[in-house]
Picture 1 (tube, rainbow, N blue to C red):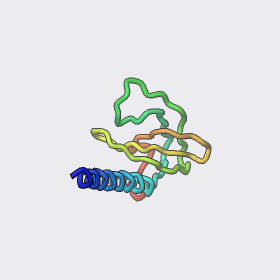
Picture 2: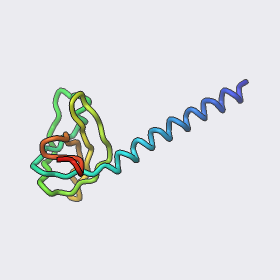
Picture 3: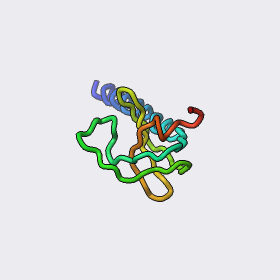
Picture 4: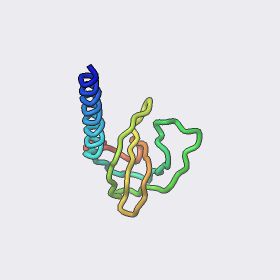
Length: 102
């Protein structure tokens, strides 16, 4: 009985880990285009923090790498890293678009 329960718990942990890892991998395939100046926030906006300090600004045409994607009620948020070392969260829409969207 104990071995069966251990095997079941291990199997559930493996499946959940694979799903989580797949989610992260899919986020990293997201490509963004910066079309206008966009503030970069230190905290995930989808968590609706009371205050969210701006750590920098993305400039049009700046290249970024997406490491995570989050979703708020009416928006997408992207954790990005720029070659300059700037790292934080941007909100998709006005200044930042998924590649292929206008």
